[in-house]
Length: 83
Length: 145
View 1 (tube, each protein chain N blue to C red):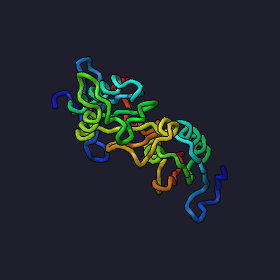
View 2: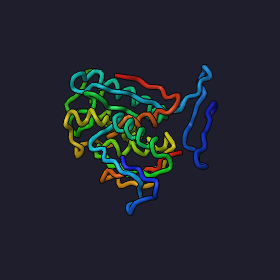
View 3: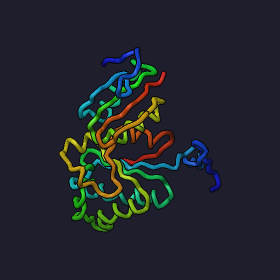
View 4: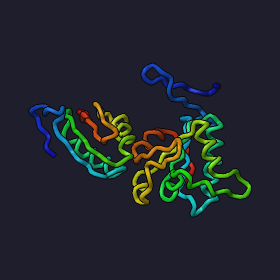
């Protein structure tokens, strides 16, 4: 993970993570670890698992991380980690 | 509704809670977990019979298709399943969805079986665990078949 404290890059995120085809509990658990390591910063997540479209918004609503925007059909999510 | 509590979320009544006869708060939600399909047509059928009873009782109902149950998410799969004494499974599923029931399909189970996203039946959504956990929230009764 390449979290930066210097600000957002041109795509509006501090760090990015391609989770590939990880899904369900594996995806959420690894996402949790990454977000906890970057409070207040924005992660661009790419997840091609079809369940991620429903899961990522649910996860954010439950945990207090902020889903800033997403392109569901491409499996891309911008998430600001809670403090 | 006597005994009901309407919870306001962002100013809108969105979740109905009920106090049952034991004083426990119930969410008004109901989950039926189904792990069987053609390998146990009896369980698959009864799961949707119960789900229909729940949705007819004004519950917000999700049937969670997981393990072998994910095969029921494919259009046409249930067409030949008709347990004696019950309605055909395809009719039970269609009635459930028409009444407002939702079908969650376990994503890793779906992928393991190389099922087809383009063949999902009406009302079915592929989800991972987080969506199910969010739906169930607190005080959500569930049954497993």
